[in-house]
Length: 266
Image (tube, rainbow, N blue to C red; front, top):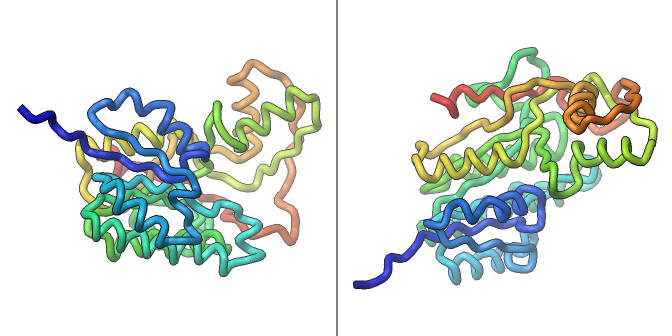
């Protein structure tokens, strides 16, 4: 009897906090073969190299955790942000269609303008106010409009406690070093653990969910200031945190971008 062939899950952006979280939990899903791609095998600035990687691996699922995520840098060089977060994703859609691969792509709460006061749903109209949000909207539209088998997952304020450079780890590092903590209290969102996101993706694959757009975020709504307070509380640390306002002239960010997740749970 021939051995059954396991479906292959390819994860790009393997060195990022989300990619590392997938690697951490991959052993829980032994019914899949996992391939983790670093930048040399999945370079957003060289899409033809991505095409070669997909043709070699033939993944059943392509989880695209690679992106240009530097919000301030995107404002300085919007063409680069669009090329990596928009144009490259459009080409990735084409490559996944050619391989009959299911594409799972991540987007952001920054596709919204932050003008409403209740959590955004998948039905709300995106209206990005910075170059990063515009580039991410371009990428998600490419998936939703052209992928034969595609998901877009919007998430927000992503952090891993054990991996990467993120707000959670930065607050702890500064508190442990005794550095003064000043955190803005006029931006509100839904901080989301990479653990939550990985669990949702695997539920999406195994259920499976209908193709389309989903919000995945943790339930608690915070300002950056209140989230910093929670981090210290969780870690049993005490430190003085001074609330501040977003500096005048800073890259525009949505003041309220909490994500509603009722679609995911229905």
